[in-house]
Length: 199
Image (cartoon, rainbow, N blue to C red; front, top):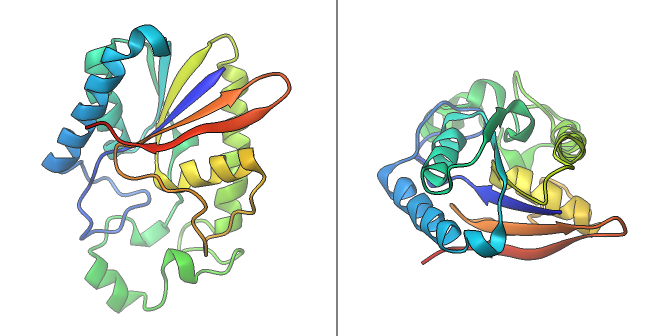
């Protein structure tokens, strides 16, 4: 089984991400369109059978742009959501700095929650649990695309490779509209490709 982990296209970085409801910016849509064209050209080789996407707007938009080319069954789920940053979601970055000084992802202790949100350890545990559930739910497919977020991709790849994941260090790079491929057999799980960007 192969899992294609796809990060959403670029959104407006003047606003906090996480569980915000903001759309892709135009540049983000173009980034995703390039990836969609690449996947469509390689579909005879890749044989992607289904798309499973985070239900947050920027990932929904990304999944739909890709699916305009691939025409596959598509499922939206909370299981692939980014870390819940609570009241900071969608706030202007400059306002968040004023209202919640020092409260940002890399500054949190592993068991410290965003106001109204998750802690890094809760996020990690949720993602690993959800990933394994989705693998079980999709075990009858050979290749599935998961459209998700940078944080989720980092947790999954760290889990697969046995690297320690914390919010202080990014083990894997996942740029906007990038592709990371995981290969899963009965005996092993491996990260086959990371941070591929279509040109």
